[in-house]
Amino acid sequence: MDKDQLINIRGRVLARMKQDEYVGADPFDGLESRLFQASGLGRFRLARLIWLQMIKRGPRALRSIAMIPPSVNPKTLALLQGAGEGVVLGDFTATLSAMQNSDGGWGYPFEWQARAFHAKRGQSNAIVTSFVVDGLIRGGMPVEQDVLTGAADFIEDHLWRDGYFAYLGHDDAEIHNASLWGAFALYRVRAGNDKTAKAVHRVLDAQQIDGSWAYGTRSHHRFVDGFHTGYILDLLDRLRISGMGGLESAIKRGWVFYRSNCFDDEGIPRNFAGKDGYLDAHAVAQSMASLCRFGDVARAIKVANWAAAHLFDAKRDVFYAGIGRFGVDQQNYMRWTQSWMVWALSIVIEKTAMNEAFDPEKPLSFCHPDPDRATKEDALRGLSEDALRNLYAITRKQASMMRATGDMEALYGLTRGMKTIQRISGERGIVLGARGAFLAS
Image 1 (tube, rainbow, N blue to C red):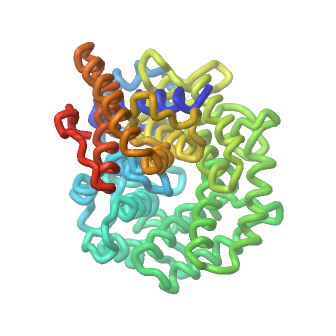
Image 2: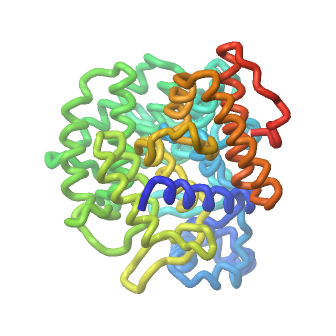
Image 3: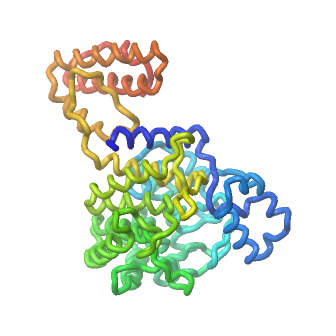
C-alpha cells in the first residue's frame, strides 16, 4: 500500500469525524447510560465496574439499548490539533478553551470508574489536561495565556504529591505515564520548575531492570503495556530534546525493551508486553508514532499498512476498535480509536518520502494537510517563469474540468495548487491571474 492510499484512508476517517462533528462513543462512557442511571446501581462501586465492562465488551447493539449519549471529548480535539507532536489537522483552540473547567483542567465528558478511583463527569485529570495543553501550544497559543497558566496552576496545586503528579485531584494513585504527562505539560508552560524535575527522576527510578515500566505502583497496576510504554518513551525523548539531561540511558533501555517485547515476531504491536491476544487500535496507533520518533520509519509504515488492511472498515470509513480471538471489534470509538489512528497515520505520512518525482507538466494538487507540501514548494521555486505559467494553466484547466464534473474533493486540491503557484510566483514578482482561484483553500 503506497502513501497515497494511506492519505486517502486518513482523509476518509477524518471526513467522517467532521461529519459527526467529533461527537461519538468511548469505551469508558457506559456510566452515562440512562438505563443504568435509572436502575440506581450507580451508587455501588462494584456495579459501576461490572457495568462498564459489560458495555465495553458487549455487542454494539448493547450501547443503543443502554441509551448512552455520545459526546465530544477534549482529548479528541487535542490530538487533531497536534498534541503528542502530531500533525496539526485543525484549529480547535476556541472550543478547547471554552471546555476548560473552573479549576484550570480538562476531563472526560463522562463519569467513569477505574479500580483505583472514581471520576465524575468532566472532572479534571492529568492526562486530558496535559494533552490539551500540548495541543494548544502546538496550535500556537502563547504560554502566557490565562488558559495555559490556569492549567499549570491546576497541575501544580491539585495534582502534586511530593514527588509525582496524581491522575486526579482527589486521589493519590501514582501512575507513571500520567505523572510524566503532568510533569511535561507543566514544563511546557513553566520551564525549569523543580516539580517537573522531581517527577521525571521518580519515573526514571521506577524503571525496572529489564527497561520496562509498570503502569503504576498499586498491586493491580503492575502490568506492562505497549501504548503507555510508548507514552513514557516519547515524553522522555521530548524532554531530552528540550535540554533535560540524564535521560539517554533510560530511553535506550526502555526502547530496547519496547521493541523486543511490545511487538510480535511479525512486527505487529501487542497490547501487553510479551503477550499476544486482543489487539487494541490504540496500541497500534501509539506504536506508529514511537517507531517514527526513534527512527524506525520502515517498521512504522509496515504497521500502518497492516492497520489499513486489517482495522479499516471501508464501508463505514472508520477503524475497528481492535481484533480479538472472535474477530474484529466493530465498535466505533471517537477518542479511543478514530482520533488516535488519524493522529498516527498523519505522523507516518509526514515521515514518508514523496511517491513520485515532482512533474511540472502535471496539474498541481495539494491534499489537506499535505505531507509533501514543503518538497513541492521547493520544486516550484526552482521553475522558470514560463514553466510556472504553464503549470498554472494546466492546473487551472484541470480545476475547470473537476468543477464541471462536480468532483469537489479534487477541485479543492487543485485550487490549493493554483493558490500556491500564485503565491510562489508572487515572491518573484510574477503576477498570475487570480480568476483561477475557484475556492478558498
